[in-house]
Image 1 (tube, helix red, strand yellow):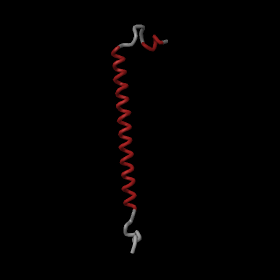
Image 2 (cartoon, rainbow, N blue to C red):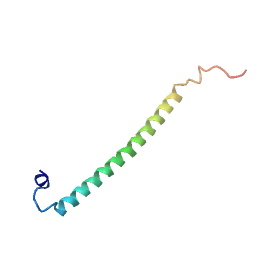
Image 3 (cartoon, rainbow, N blue to C red):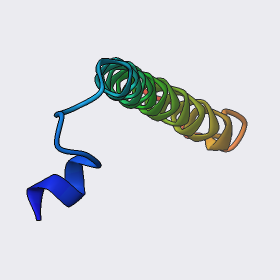
Length: 67
């Protein structure tokens, strides 16, 4: 079974191993970029929410603080 998974009896092809390492590194790079973009998106969404909250306050309708 293991021989069938490797493809032949001689062991793994060094080119195949190098390609597999390259692809694994690419996946790690993409995962870290995804985490960074999600964090940036969360920050932008929070800023937009805060800005819309400030816009929803109508200063003309607010009561005076101390008169």
